[in-house]
Length: 481
Image 1 (spheres, rainbow, N blue to C red):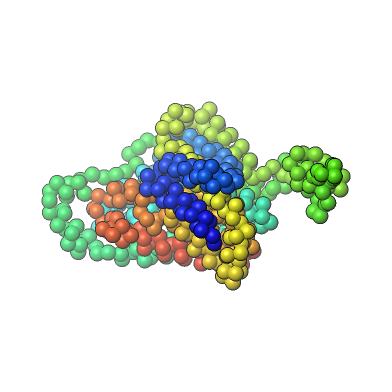
Image 2: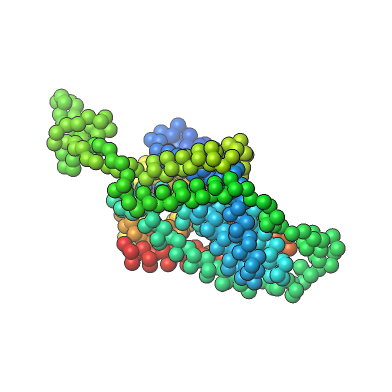
């Protein structure tokens, strides 16, 4: 690795680190500084911005945001709360399952903010240390991203894998990721079940509630959605949203049902066409120019791409909710789901473009350096995914930025599917909004970010969940593929 290559890598890592310190839109915007330095300062050829993934996020987030504006999200939260309050003694296991499946349905972990105060309230009323369910529930809200049929991480994995010869579908990914991640979450919940001191034996907590003001703050209020009346239009919006998911999964399984179109491709082994003694054209260049030449290009029928299917179905569902469910577009734009989704768009746009620029320019060098390691230990790419995710607060961005490199190193598709849960590592440094919000929602003060930063309430359940999920997913992927 040359000095200039190391310097450019430091620019990439520095941009990601600074962006993560500012958070929100800064992740994508500050990546632009790194991109400018590489392109204008070092003359590197720009990579490709991840437009397909961005379009899918916009469509999915718009649909989910419209559903939230209709009140449909309140109904889902209410259903989850009813189950949790019916079995309060099992809150440590049921809470992460609720946050996990909410994320699976909606495609973003930012839908759980309403549920988190309820989880804390139920734990307090039952005398359970809130850190136990809250810590693992926050982890679960992000783990669900690799299990959602409309999440950018899943769709990007499928599209990039298909382009690299691994013919996997969205249901094929979910068949591995969902059971693996549920196993990981249950392992984390089991480890959290007796975590820390019980509230009646915790001297710090007991000292706090001796203060009448603190006692009133902790026990005086009750967070609930059960008193909220859910209109018929909100329930209708949920059914439209769920119907859209069913349609997407149906087309992913039965792609023969999709419309097909004539598509041109290069014939393998075709010799370049000599236009003049000094000018020749390759088959790939002819395909890009959409020029057919016998013996060099051929036309075949190709079904509508799944990334376009998701966009069409999600946008259509959003329109139906606006027309038939009284969902306000202005309210959707002001809602947390749409806003957090747009932040994710900017983050993935900047981060993935920056990473692709660096790795595409040093692809051959990377192959030489890492080929022996990944050939002998192909699973080790999971460590790379995890470490990159610690810097990048987006699983979709990790997939878009790192998966093409992994394929270029010769790692088999089933291996990469097996290590997919390892793209979640941003709990390691507790600066993600869902973790910060969970700390604030816990009125008992047991869910904490420690004095030394890394000794926080999310570290143990996060490590156990990702480690277990990756092992189970790897085994399942080897069995199925």
